[in-house]
Image 1 (spheres, rainbow, N blue to C red):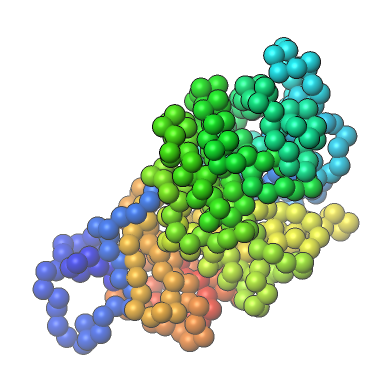
Image 2 (cartoon, rainbow, N blue to C red):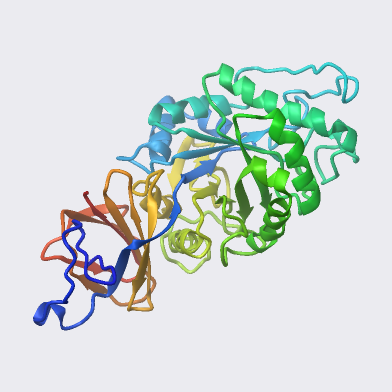
Length: 448
């Protein structure tokens, strides 16, 4: 049952100050939710389809395109994702498949020269997917740049790291602001804008280096130019490493004024605690390492559904994140994306990773508040949330090999099970009891 210091039912009935006696209370509830202890507000869950992955989707037959969009954004058929992360291009036209095309591919003649922006209204099919997402109700569009165009950097290349030249800082800020205006022309409001991706990692693809101090300094340049957009920083390649960037922003009052959301990835290090800020935080990119396409829920490979469910739980409960954005929604080959697109057969495959994330995203909606929750059984990972409509959601990941019984659930509750043979399969909660199957994720939803 839901408990405060005193017992509180799922329907929010009056508190019972003296716990009742009898057979039903011989043992404490295996799960306790302290509704009066509240944590972070949730912005949402989402995916990225940057680096031209949307072109894979668009090459499929229309019926399959719609099926995939349903799996991503529909709350009845799929995950109901509420955040879409877009990649801001930096490469010239005709670049290799994995590179995103720039809105100003050539040097206009220097940082102070009149800009020569170009826009095709498509942006590597990102506009197409963004419009589709908007039709499903998505309102958070996070545009993120992996690099400035090469001519703005000291290495003359959008790839292989390099540093933004000081004289190009304002021009780069205007470039990013213009990108948001192009999307506005297409009916898409970019709500969140990032100027760097993994600034502490040099990649052979689009990448650009910033130290924490340099990132904080650039935020002060971009903020006044991109007014009206939530500024995001800094997408470090590890959560531990991201703390240095958050600390640098927080230490500078002007940078802190502009940066509204602090972000980090979890490739180099997992979420182990909150970032050092009172602003919103997002786990803004991750998928597990691996070299095989895996559709399984629990095979010990390190990139199955259980792995994703556990990572999302830790980000929410250890890191107090408000947003969780997975990499990628769909890709090809030996990908750890949520879906695999087979270009030759013109079809797609769904992994259990999708359903692991969907168990959270479909039911925990933007504006929800995380509530304090715990379990007496150490095999259970528990988190709880109250949505704006009054509904409550309890997520229980049973990491053990034996079933666990949770008695004392009250109210109009439905349990949705995700495991090797179930994909959010619903069942009514009867006799106030839920059986938590071994190695499964159970989502209990109680109507307000």
